[in-house]
Length: 242
Ligand code: ADE
Image (cartoon, rainbow, N blue to C red; front, side, top):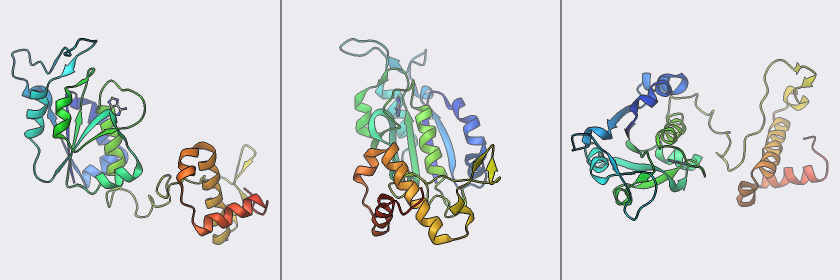
């Protein structure tokens, strides 16, 4: 996979791309990341990429010409173009999986107050990372890259993304490691039992309860499996220690 980032601030990405799982994935050549400096496409002497908004108002707006010239310098028939923007649909695990299957992902990052809206007609989609406004799309694009790269085959151990939060529409169950007791707090007995059926039941129960408590929006639209319904009934009847 190849990811191209269009930005005014490529220097922001250095540590992110050289550290931990993401750094290793680049080393293993599972993904290649390159940058296009939007300012290189500005045509005036002062390399301006923005101007004041028509209709008045605060701040500066990024101009069509340098941004679109930068885009056209890298876009090909295999490219999928995403504009980072608080106006987009919100990134989900499902979207990250979808993007991880693209050959060439172009992530466009605006800065300042925004971009000329005509630029949006040249991208496949706008993508937000949440209901808050950042100073630019750079951090948002790193969030997208992180969520996408870790899903590439060979990035993290096979199977370790299967049980994660959001993969089945629920939050993940709690995990524990050594020691069995830490400052008086014990690891739940069932996890030490070696009884895999009971462990599975406990994990599903915990997952359902955490989702109900913290993400009622996800819980409301969850399609419960037969197994989950059985477990919920057990919890209701007090037959499960969770
Ligand atoms: N740029 C500014 N805020 C953003 C957000 N929430 N998501 C994506 N890009 C952004």
